[in-house]
Amino acid sequence: MFVSVDINNRSLKTKLGVLQKKIERYGKHNIEKRENLHITLNFLGNVSVKEEELIKSKLENIDNKRFNIILKGLGVFPSEEFIKVIWVGCKSKGLYELEESINDVLPKKYRSNGSFVPHVTISRLKNISKMEKNRLIEFINGQKSKKFGTLNVTNFNLKRSDLKKDGAIHTVEKVYDLT
Image 1 (cartoon, one colour):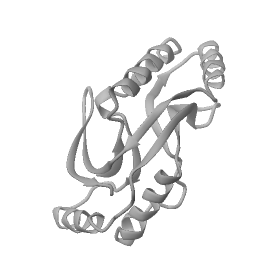
Image 2 (cartoon, one colour; image 1 turned 45 degrees about the vertical axis):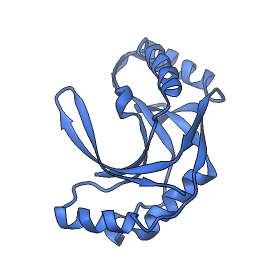
Image 3 (cartoon, helix red, strand yellow; image 1 turned 180 degrees about the vertical axis):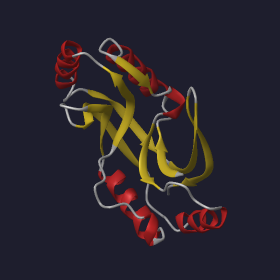
Image 4 (cartoon, helix red, strand yellow; image 1 turned 135 degrees about the vertical axis):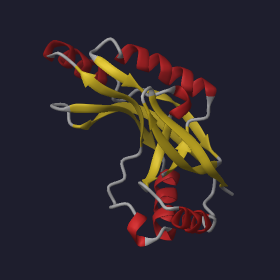
């Protein structure tokens, strides 16, 4: 399970889809499905039914205001030397405040470790040659200051993720509206 903000803006999803197509030119990727694009606020892992009910009730206590997120720039995890994930950065004070509020209400064992790097994963790199990797890094560096759009955040979700052969299936367990 995880807590997230969905990328639910059609125009933004289209822009990110175009970006994904460009990235696919460099190596072999598992491209994140457009319907799964999100910003993870807290990864909970496997949660029992009893703990899920507790988490749902704790998240009800969050009363943060709505906010905007600027999607800007590309980055990688864990490093340019060993690229596993390609992501779009997220700039927003409200996003940090929401992540902090979620951390404050969750049972201790589900709290994050304080290293929140807000991003939208758009691709997971499977295989790449050295030449393609150099071109990919050049492409990513050329996009570091590019603004892809703004997302208006009115809610966040508790989701379940089921891994299947053709990718993850995310199911919304509960939606929490912001004020």
